[in-house]
Image (cartoon, rainbow, N blue to C red; front, side, top):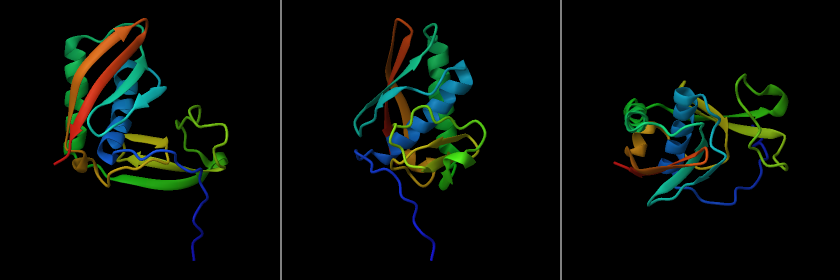
Length: 155
């Protein structure tokens, strides 16, 4: 019998399609702009918002490219899988700087195809096709902080 790893308790119930889209959006922003993953996000069923530290506001063309990239990734039907690792077995490139101080020694990594991997204990879809479609409803830029407001429309 395989022992279930002990993880920190999760304090909120995400909407899995939007939460999974958040992972794709974080990786897309890292790849497009060389920024860090978001330090804060508010993910909900009706609309979600996420902020990125950027030195300048993306152009309307870049915002359209973000949305197009997300929808292309969703259409690829990428699998969402999990693996449990200890802190001394973290794959290269996985950052732990956003973990709470009391995070457990065993971590759950969430992989979305070969596109994204990060530690997370939240709820996700089984594959990106279950996200539906991704729509940026607005953006704003203020003193180095770029906010994206988005929604997902599951199929």
